Length: 226
Image 1: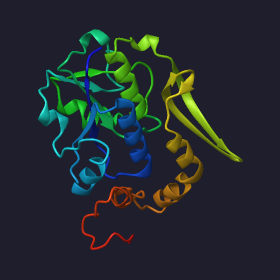
Image 2 (image 1 turned 45 degrees about the horizontal axis):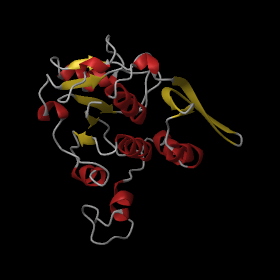
Image 3 (image 1 turned 180 degrees about the horizontal axis):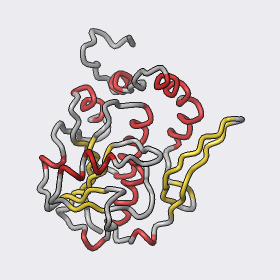
Image 4 (image 1 turned 120 degrees about the vertical axis):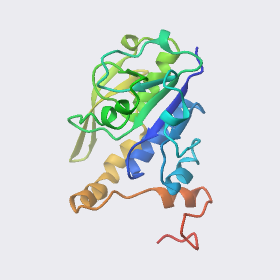
C-alpha cells in the first residue's frame, strides 16, 4: 500500500456548515494523510488547522506538476492504482457539488495545471469526502471498478425528503457519508437555504470552530458570540 498524500484545494469563498462537515469527515477517513491548500483567508486557515494542516499556497505552488494528480470528474482517464507512487499528491477540489455539474474543478483547478495529470473516479460526481475515500482505496491497490458505489442518497425526516444526486462509495453495503451531514440535512439546511434565497452568504462555522478549540476568532476581544 502506498502512503499517498491527499490534498484538498479549498475553492469555496465560504466555510459553510455543509462544507465543514465534508472536510471534517474527509479528515477522519484519511487518518492524518490529508492537508488543505489554497486557504487564502486567515480565519479559514485557523479553523481548518484544528483538523489538518492548512496552507495559504495552492497545491500547484507547493508541488511539482509531475507529482500532482487532480481528481476531475471531466477527466477522460480514470485513476489507476499503478500510477500512484510514494511521491504522488492527489488533489481533490474543495467544492460543494452542483447539479447539474458546472465543471468548476476543470475551470478553477485543472486548467491551471496543464502538466499535471487529471483523473476521474469513473462515472458521476462524488462529494469531497467520498472522493477522498475513493482515492485512498485506489492508493491501497483497489481498482475503481472493484469499489461498490451507489448513485443518489435520499434522506427522509417525517414529511421532508431530500435527495442528493451524487455518487457515494459503499462500505459494508452502507454509503460512506457523515452522520453529521444527515443530521444537518434534517435540521440545519432550511436556515441556510433561506439565507441563500435572501441573497445572503451561508452561515460560516469559523467562530464556532475557533471557540470550540479554545482559540479566539480574529478581530474579537472576547469569546462571546457576536
